[in-house]
Image (cartoon, rainbow over all chains, first blue to last red; front, side, top):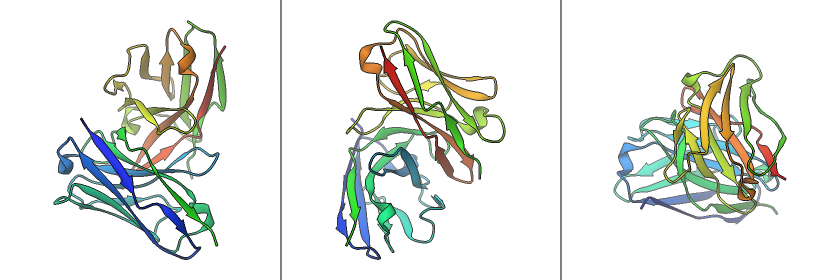
Length: 121
Length: 110
């Protein structure tokens, strides 16, 4: 069974940093792209970042470009999202999602349960 | 900047058929955008219904189907049930690794 388990969320002050993790199991980790998607309170879903199966391609929404960094550790089957210079508008539930293909084009087919990030002083 | 458009709300009668659409503020949606569809109920993680235009995700019943209708992607639900009452989101692949969500459609079954 394919499973994704996020961790690392919490309360952080504006300007601070946080690293989210997503432990993956049940599939060949390097064969599929992965994405991070977030949902601010009461708002819709927003695609944040994606990474190719090999990790050599990384992609970002304009809203986080230059502040967030996505990576994957194939030895640990884990996806990461390093979030720096956090702002109040980054407050959201962050979901890890497996993409249905090697690149980021096919759409996401499996989701984690999410981890909550609150940016507040 | 191109915006992905969805109907803000829609209603369907139990047992009825409804088609939700996903368009672009500028241009037409084709299979090259690999449209995908997600269902979300309050407080829950999204659930994938359809990816790559018309491929149903594992375990999704065949009363959910995806297609291209005219210049938009479409999600059709046949035989609507009470527990189909949810928010539905589409995603379009914009190229260069970038995906964009639509604003979502709130579906009411009544």
